[in-house]
Image (cartoon, rainbow, N blue to C red):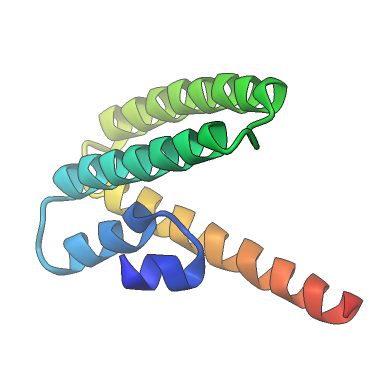
Length: 116
């Protein structure tokens, strides 16, 4: 939680790879990470709603895109798991998401530094 707060990301993106490193089965680590991210996102949304800062049109758009992206990701992963017959693809997908997040955060930080 502390590391996730320091990096400004949901706790699941830190704890997922950590759980895999500690020997937790990749499917369990993935599901646990998803639950952590859902909880963090829900609490953040409630906070924005409470203070009147939530833009409902934007929130509805993000909800629809999130559901569609989840369905697409699940469909692709099921196909890959059937094709390669390996449960470790879940670990690779978590690693890929963490890598993309790190790259995006690095790009964002560089842009902010150059604009300052």
